[in-house]
Length: 113
Image (cartoon, rainbow, N blue to C red; front, side):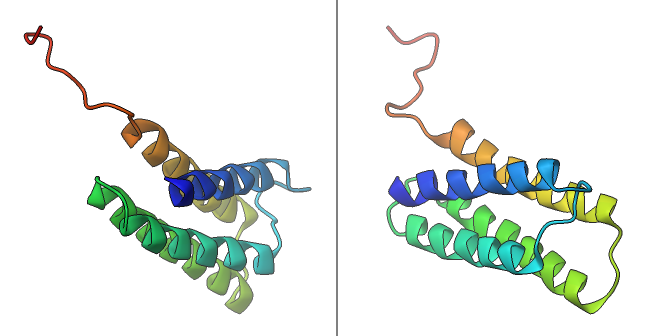
């Protein structure tokens, strides 16, 4: 649970930095790569304790996409609009996975009493 919460905070910081960068999408490459590695490491940590295994399997993929985007930005000129959308969508997905899947008690069917 702690790893997922920390991953959500990383996702919020990514969304914030993507939206409020001087021109949108022009984040620091090092910060982007560190965030990607943090997402991957936290997801692997969360996988050890999560009941929903696909959630902690999806976050490393999102972190790998983000890491690939950071490396691509170092190698070639990437339009800032593309960088903005990749970072924002990955950040929103990380946050959404936590919000959708975290429940303290299992859902009950409407027919059960």
